[in-house]
Image (tube, rainbow, N blue to C red; front, side, top):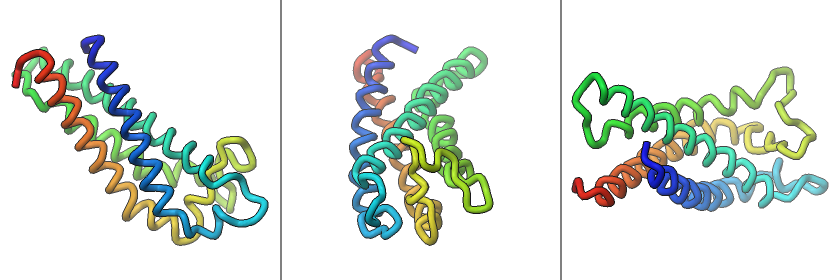
Length: 159
């Protein structure tokens, strides 16, 4: 992976974080579990979860690029070869997140810590995350990876 590719992926990760934050903020704004009196700041919790999702997307993007470059040694290198592995890795992480956060018996990981975001996965909002947000996050990861690949191809004159 080229050094400039890390910078491009980092810039797109920042943009991805902004899009995810705004989308989650609007989706969960009426969530009574996140907005109840005595709970932590809703915007701060949304920013933390969006940052975690954007970080996972960045890791998936880099992993997809590494997988694509490893396969390029054995097969023909395709210009869009990192898109599918990056999207699959990101999507699996997004769909698995609610099951990873919930430990069982009403206990969540990071409960009552600075990283407590359990209100996003309680009651019906868990289903909303699984059936609405996770597919949208995966689609957004797919589009972000397409933009990364396209910008890299333009930068190096391979349009």
